[in-house]
Image (cartoon, rainbow, N blue to C red; front, side, top):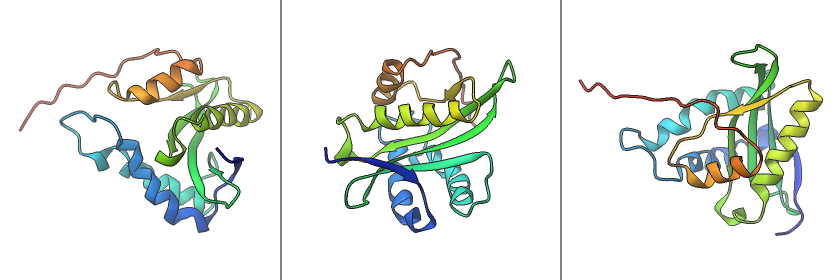
Length: 157
C-alpha cells in the first residue's frame, strides 16, 4: 500500500464519504435488515461534523498520496454507558475494498484510540453485528472485549 495520511475530513470529502458509507453493510447482514438500515443513521452525524455542527464528534479520513480517501472513522466523545467515565464511541469505521487486507483498519483504530485518549477518554466502545466476521476479527485483534450482547426478537406484524 502507498503511504497513508490521516487528516480531518472536510466538506469537500462528503461525496466520497457518502460513496463509502454503504460499505458498513458489506457483510452477510441479518435477514430482517435492509442494507441501508446499517448506515442511514450515520448520515446526519457525518453531515453535522462536516458542517462543523457536532462539537463532541470527529471525522478523520485516511488518504493516499493523491489524497484519495481509502477509509474513515466517525467518533463521538461521550460518557461510558455504565460507569459514566469519559469515553468515546466509534460510530463508524470504513475501509474501501481496494485498501482492505493492508492494515488500514488497524491503523485507523490505533489513530482513533490515540485521539480519544488525548481528549481524555478512558475507554472506546463500538457496536458490531455478530455476522460481521471481518470487523469482529479486527476488533478482537485490537484488544476490544465483547462485553455486552444485544439481542433482538422480531415480533412480526
